Image 1 (cartoon, rainbow, N blue to C red):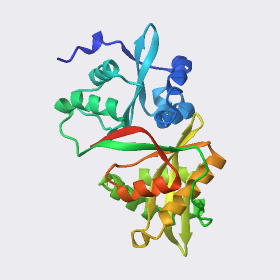
Image 2: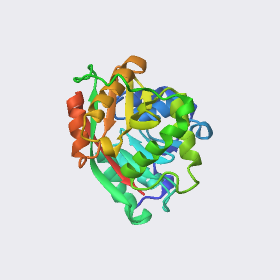
Image 3: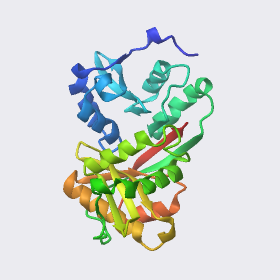
Image 4: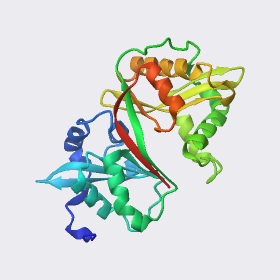
Length: 283
């Protein structure tokens, strides 16, 4: 039976909690790099962050967190924290697009929220979390480079294709693509967008989606479907790893769907090893 909200030891965190939050995020910098990167950039004020961060408080300190914004992302949450965060969540599903993070916490939250939020569009219960902290095992593709701001229009179709293939819905359906275009442009402006582009055609692309605590996280890896199976993905990913290690952090991570065997083989060839298991609940 769900407890009333007023009885739960969970509260909205603010910038006064930053030291304790940083200590908590440092426990698993690979798994929690996304949340850590957002908090390092924006702090804990909901207006700046564009999200709330809830803390499960014990003796006046947060022992687990839950990032609640476009995604719901539990951090360091055991069974008790998972239950409390599920009770904090609204009974009607908010406008978040997914629940993401370490599988045990995500699946635990979903078991409690599903009766109220209704069926998910898709449940991805096992997504290997991978990491590499050595040079890539294979030679990088020297043609992979930073995307220039004037190449936004060249890159956008590849980004839309990747997102649609990976998530199952188009990122341009809701608003004609304005928000997604702004996000792609932001990655380019931050020097986190990499691609191999030849004659105005994107052959390979990927982004660094988060950087914090000595870790960077790769996302959006994509190869032109007509060119798959030729080694572009392996060499391109090796390039992104080498560039990320040189530019951002010595440790590079990503997570992949367990059913995507070609991608898993690519990451194994590059030198990634398993560091945990994520899960995603997609709406």
